[in-house]
Amino acid sequence: MLEVKGAKYELKYSADKDMFSVRVWGFYSPEDALAFIKDYTDITKKFKPEKTSLVIDGTDLLTSKPEAKVLLVECLKLYMQLPYKNRLFLKPKSATAGIMISSAMRDAGMKNGKDGLMLDDMKAIEDYLKVH
Image (cartoon, rainbow, N blue to C red; front, top):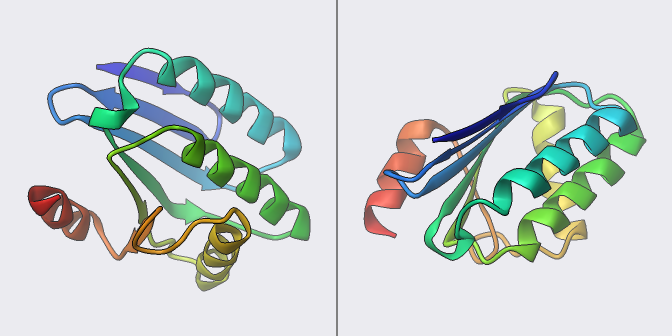
């Protein structure tokens, strides 16, 4: 297992599950986003994304400023650069964050169901991965 922990994120690659999980929480500043992008870029060089499902847990992600959406769009574009087997997102607890993520997905050029899929909970993700 590969693991990186930052102030507002955890990145974990599990070879036995062919899963790369990204957990993010709280409010993000540009500095937080830059630290995340650096660690994300470093860890993704250590496994084959085409055999890996990317699971993004943003359940505790918070949004407050319009600039946060710009940062989010850039991160989503970063996820699209690698040929992951699946890109699955856990729906945030905050309705505002959920709306912002959905909007950012569209702005990043992601098509729901094709480039990424937002699911309600981890059980839904596990069920999805059993058949995909």
